[in-house]
Image (cartoon, rainbow, N blue to C red; front, top):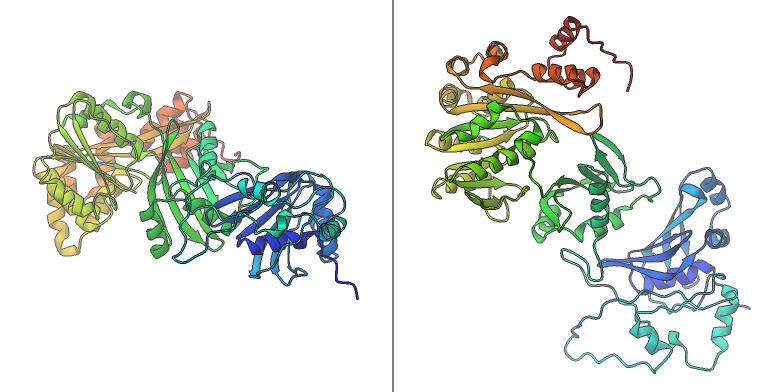
Length: 566
């Protein structure tokens, strides 16, 4: 009885299992890609779409082709002739191209058969891998050397020979009848690439390519999610980084992200399922990375932090805000929702101090974002997790480090806030951030962090130490890009009394009546941006926290407000 014929896919499956790859990706018009724990290995032969269709026709259920042409992804399990079982995920991409992902279900140690795809006739082989010293267990035999040509050449080039020309089944039969030495008779020299630390051996991490494109597009954030196409935020809108890019599976995503994670970030992610760290690409930008896990698998967001620190003039910071940089003591809080530019504003203020004063600046960040070189000031930047255990520990230690100015990247908890207030009271200028939307809510948030029996004391301390609150949002400009709108609260006797008495709801009125001293409400600045035709009225209305008042301002100046469009 004749032995069952191997399908064209079976040799792929056998090689996938034999070399302990995590995944094999076949895509029309591209080379086959084997994914290992330490990196990817691509073949040098391109697989045509017609070849993928022929492969699937041999093994797939009858409805697969119809489903793919309808745009529906397909999953099924296939067992090769050697008994290896894989799960296939097949998807139709743009342009009528198919993508097949093979992942092992059962490990099997089998000898792969020689095969080819039919046309084209190029050899299927892995690209050369960098040489590296490898240790052997005590007593292990030295690998035997292959003869010159054939297996020796294949091994020297990390080559996996799949055959050449003709029909796959015919090529395999011919190979079995040959009497001359064959490369496949020696162990295939396809080794797993080393597990990378910050970057894989043999090339730049894939994430770097995405980040370079993000910067080229002028984007602020790169979004990577399992089973999704990479996306980016450009001028506030989240868009596909490349509509032609295939979806990235969870296994591929994990491997790709761990290539760029620091050892601490890997540990943190394994224990907590999320992690934060900083990443820098020389000549491109710095990035703040956050890893997370959701229902589909692992994901990440990379926030761009330009190497160049913008000046207060470039940001359009009010003069009253710059005046805060000349204070000798007190607390200044920059606040706003996530992604509103708080870090950029703080960096501009610290840089202004660095260029104009002769002081000692200590920054406490998680992670370090903007890097400040010593100019007129001495700047020490400490990163939570790498240089200190927590914000509160670093802030407490800063008091013994002879600082003039302390920057607290985020006032997250009661103890950090309490120490920040005490630091400001004891003759230091403290800059900090909170995730609040208005000046009044910032004061309330600080006080509400404390238990009721301490709130009266904190109100008194805050009324004496708080020097200013800058609340900000980012708005889309009519001409493209984004611009910040600011609310500015400066502490005077009236503001101090309201904080002490718990009447923070009256702070907005004080800001309106004290515009001459540099204070302004968010609506004041939004209205100004609309009048100057920098921002559309609709955009200002969306970003306003007091929409009824802003609508009245528009009516008074006969500014139309159209809320129907996008």
